[in-house]
Length: 296
Image (tube, rainbow, N blue to C red; front, side):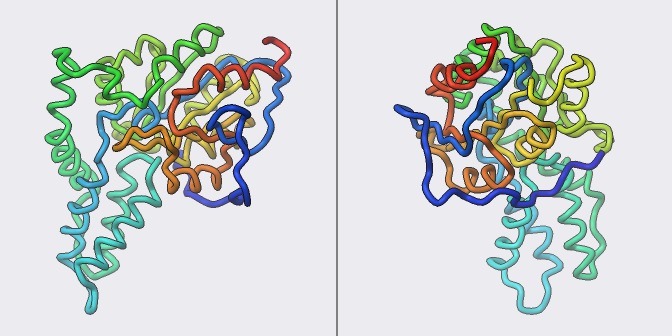
C-alpha cells in the first residue's frame, strides 16, 4: 500500500489558541467519549534525535547526482533548491520515495538513473558515518539517552503507559535500524514487539497499514487512537482513521522547545488537533486529553 502524498486539508488559524497556562496549541477542542487506548508514535524527530541533521546529508548528495544531468540554465543553486523542495515534500514517507523522485528527475533530463535502492544505500552509508558516534556513545553510556531524545519523551511514554495505553512506533527508516536505535534509547521498553519500520518491499509497509492493524487486532474504532508525529503521513493517517493527532513540531537541532514553524504549518495542514514543540508539558497534555473522557 503506497503512502499518501501531502495535501493541505486544513488552513492555518488566523490566531493561535493555547491550552491555558501552556504552550500547547489547540486547533480544535478534544472531547472523547472514552479515554485513548492506543498511541502510535513516529520515530525520527518525534522521539529520536539520533538522525538529526539527515537533511544536510541527503540534499547535497542528491543535488550532486542531479547536477550531472542539469538542463541549460540550471545552476548548482537551482538544482539544490529543487532537491530541497522535493525532499521536504516527501519527508514522512519511507526514504525510498525520495530516491524514486531523484530517479524521475534524472530521467526527465534525459539521463539514465541508478536504481533508487542504490541511491538509498549510498545515502544511508553517508548518514550512518555521521551518526556512528551517537550510536556508539549511547551503547557505551558516554551519551545519555535524554540527550538523543526529543525532550520529555520518556515522561510522555511513561504517562501513557501508566494510563494503560498500548504504545506503538512506526518509522519510514528501515526496520532493522529503528529496532536498534529504539533499544539504545530505551523506547523499546514501552513498545515491546510493537516497533515497525520500512521494509525492502515498500508496498508491504506503511503507517496506514500499522494503524489498520492496531484497530483490527484490538477490535477498536479510530477514536481510541492517539497519533504523535513530526511528519505529515502519521498525522493524516491518524485523522483519516478517526483518531486524535498530536503534531510534534520539534526543533531537532536547537532543542529549544519552540515549535519549528515549517513543521507546524505542514502538520496543521495535514489535520493536527494539537501542536507541541516537544513533551516538556507532557503532564498537561495527557491531563487535557483525559479530562474530557468518560474513563478519566
